[in-house]
Amino acid sequence: MEKSFSPHRLKLLNFYSDTYQYQDYLEIGLARGECISSVKCRNKTGVDPDISRLHKIPADIEIFEMTSDTFFQINKKKFDLIFIDGSHRKDDFINDVICSLEILKPEGTIICHDVSPPSEAHQKTDLSACGHVWKGWIHFRQTMHNIKMQVVDSDNGCGIINPGKQELLSKHIGELNWENLQKYKKEWLNIIESPIK
Image 1 (cartoon, helix red, strand yellow):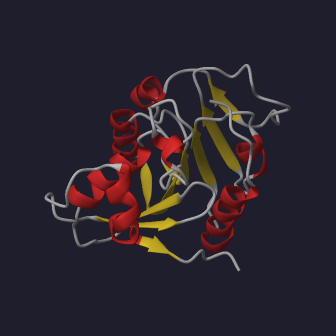
Image 2: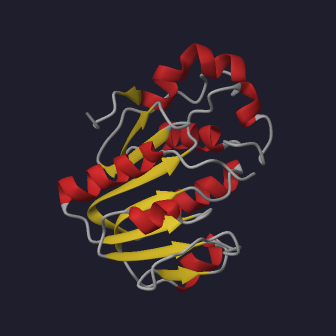
């Protein structure tokens, strides 16, 4: 599903790029290319299985027309900042995060889009605007001690992952359905205020 571009994700990406002087950027899922074209990193790499939607991408951006699975198999680079907005299927999202953590530099940041669906319809199926990304997010909140996970609850939820530590959610938190997400969203997703002022 094609989505309209919101500037919030770009502002958040550039906040991290500026604050930590990040140079090497990877974007999984390019849509029309607005984000990757405007992120303030010197070296930019984009991955998408269908680049026919791209619009006026600068020539110095390295584009791979392939699935993220294929890219991760051939990639040899490490990145400071990774933006994940690819497949919205839970298992695909989980794989994208695992593979991104393997190529993230020690002080790097991963930002994941569509972690907090604003309506039930947004997460009805894998092909909805947000799909089941939020369920993949909770999987990591329940299983990975050695990362820090937070969500800025705007622009369909921008999840921020850094190396660090987190207290795990119980694996017995209840059924992962829309009603429970609304009831426990702040705890499940670990909602924070946006660092963008």
